[in-house]
Image 1 (cartoon, helix red, strand yellow):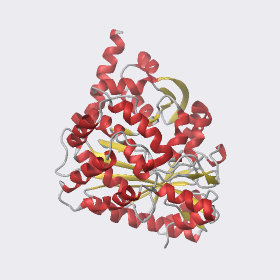
Image 2 (cartoon, helix red, strand yellow):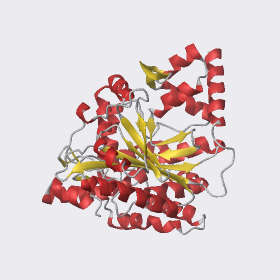
Image 3 (tube, helix red, strand yellow):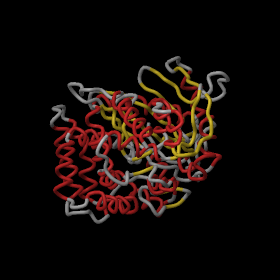
Length: 425
């Protein structure tokens, strides 16, 4: 026990040391925005068809899955952002930032989204502001042929295919090493009101589904609490690292190649010691609702579906506001809930199905969290709180975009949803 204890202590110290000591004068924010790419009838599109026309002007530089063969382009990079193909060959991801504020993020997002949507339109495809493929089912046929994905699919089993259809709006916010455990705890707890306000994946496999957030509901098939809210809080970085190491490590990476492993990562540590590079690779394939990202010293907030194109920054505003007001978040949760993790786990399960119509753990709980986010943004002094306005409207009406999408499909069909949710040039 002594050797593994020492390994964890060293690993946790190395991990925390990758995060910055102090926050900048203003926290920066970034966005990984995933969008379903579809044809007019809602069938899955093909991101690979986008590469050649996007590269025509010389702005974008390709990055290959295998630099030796150049057989699969996995991303294009430019001065304005990065365009990637996700696990699903019909899911395009735009990596934006970091920016100093939401106004800059809005401008960067608008530029890149429009650029991609124009190419998609030329190819007869549509870019949806939606959180899941509305018609095509999750399957191996939808998987992007990256080498690592074949190994991960073999290790994770059929649950892996869930990633081939989902589309999230994932936000990164600057944090320091002393904030790691607190922000992981609080943002995992707040994943429930985040889902309640942003559920937008209610139509999948060609029909209205059971979940308003089909993305979160279906990813539960991964098991082990590997996706979603952590089962409890952490008291230290070491405790958090131990928790991540209990998950199975699906695949090991060595010298640009991959090896099937599929055992708890702790077993690897017993034989190899505190290997920080191996840990970071393993950690990347765990998907809790809030996870620290050492390579850029941020917290990544993961559970929101992609939003309608008319409300592109609501998730970023909510996440940034909460991180800026972390002490207020903690005090609010402690005052409101006698048993925060039990209460929020129950509420989270309900929000995935019912969104804002779920029974809140205490009266006006979501309103309280929204006010805290608003105060956090107002404290930055840049007028960013106005990006929360659509969420206040949703709360007043007790309707998410997922409610509207489901109603539309029931009355007019999937094609009507595609037309309503696509980016209109």
